[in-house]
Image (cartoon, rainbow, N blue to C red; front, side, top):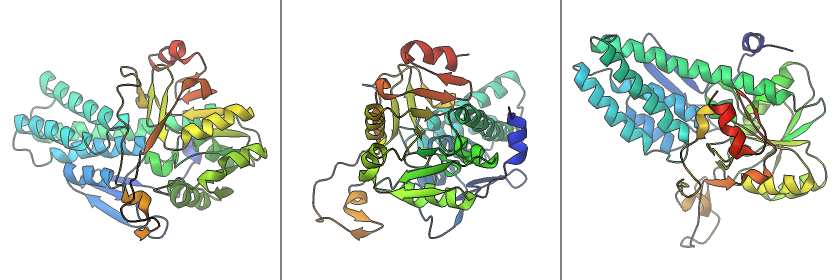
Amino acid sequence: MVSVKEIKEMFKPKLKPIIWDNNQNKLTVLDQSLLPFEKVFVELRTPEEVADAIRLMKVRGAPAIGITASYGMVLSVLKASSIDDALKLLHNAKQVMDKARPTAVNLSWATSHMLNRAKQYVESGEAKNVKELVELLKKDANKVFDDEMEAEIQMGLYGLEKLNSGDTVLTQCNAGGLATGTGLGTALAPVKIAHLLGMNVSVIAPETRPWLQGSRLTVYELMEEGIPVTLITDTAVGLVMFKKMVSSVMVGADRILSDGHVYNKIGTFKEAVIAHEMGIPFYVLAPVSTFDLKSSVNDVKIEERDPNEVRTVRGVPIAPENVKVFNPVFDVTPPKYITAIITEKGVIYPPFDKNVRKIVER
């Protein structure tokens, strides 16, 4: 069995969506809202710019949002005049960024983690001035990135056990390296590792309206890596499963509750129900940072976005201008439809209300 270390040495991502310059304290991200037609990198200088980038989907995908927010917290203290000022700026930065995308738990997890680490450094005396605090927080943000990469490799290796050469995986939205910031991904990690090891594995990607992350991002990313991929409309999902064109479904997640309810890009619930009816395994892949062990289904706010995202396609009208629109970004998949949840700590099988905590809290 290949190891995490071996995969880390072998995998060289073609796309690097998040770039942090440790010497210049500079954060640069690939503007995913412009893909696949334009490959533009933008520099983010403040927490406000980070929040805007997240809100405007320049940065998207729960893990990538968390990594970017971690560096956003570092940016917030670069010009602090004192330790007290730095802590105030961190508090403010957390509030600004947390509002950008409320459903993805990785965002608030990352900002809370960085704020708590800063408080620990100040209270312990490790950070006696702003410069020392900045250096320590940079290490923490880099560790968030490194831990995410290792987690994705480990998830990919667990997911690899669910694949055979010749398999075709159906996914949803984009849960590849663009969504995680590392170049590897969560749901696409097993596919990429399988491809890296010479296995013949392909992907079917639904377009994922209204932002078309499937057609714009997943297809683009897989083609860049040389992995066979077929694009379908969202409405073709049932037919491709009925025709046995799919071996398994692998999706990511933006939030997973302790009882196994999964919040992911709108359309995931439909895939899970059809897969369940057709006897096709349905796997969710996410790091433990995506788990929310405190909330219930009634607590989670599902983000709704601008109605014009549905009325138009890239600014071109496709519906009456004033038609009423319901535009939720995520849906929730009940645990009964999920075969297993794959994390870096292990594979979680039903009953999830008993087994989630056993793995996540290890």
